[in-house]
Image (cartoon, rainbow, N blue to C red; front, side, top):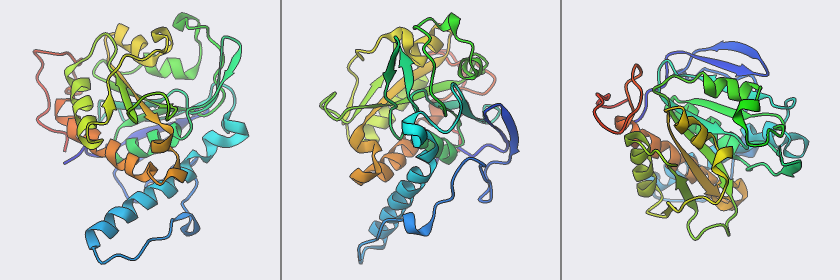
Length: 289
């Protein structure tokens, strides 16, 4: 049983807000390109209906990822939007889970161009839609802000500053295949919570234990996880290697499924919508089904 799609949400891109009804097969998003039949991968013949259904799910997910990620890869991965623009699908009224791809597009750091974490924008969108979570992604090149959050005056920062106290935030990042021995890495920062521990456990199950929990070498001051934990939020960071993200590898569809299942499994440890997530002493929903 997974998270229920929210009854209503707000979709914002480049400052425009559109009402959107969720949980409907007919819901549409104005910035998402439709998935064409020609994008679908060919299906090998099989006599196992279960295997065929699973493969179809993976392959259609891959096609959707290619279509959705096009706006992030536009302009040499600077994104289709203006500088510092974002895509914000707000479902915080119906789910505490917020998925964020802060590096879906390129950024400038210390005066130098930092490459985008390819496909994290599309992955974040798709998984959030599947589980009824909010999603925040960069859609334009991110300006240099020198690791000092107090100097930031952009839509991305305004949105995360306004998240409800109960929000459970998950950053989705990319890493090189050679970065670690495992294809997935998670960082729970200095303040792990019951919710983030549940997500880590579910990820371990979904990826058959191939999840590293080694401390990241990145400067913590730059991360959304560190910033939001210091504000009292429950937050963690997930790093996916290139093979898991790239549709060309043939594994991207499975990655979407694994992440979807992991967040759904962890949902019984998410807080009630009216409370702040804490490690102990909190009444929690029996399950977000």
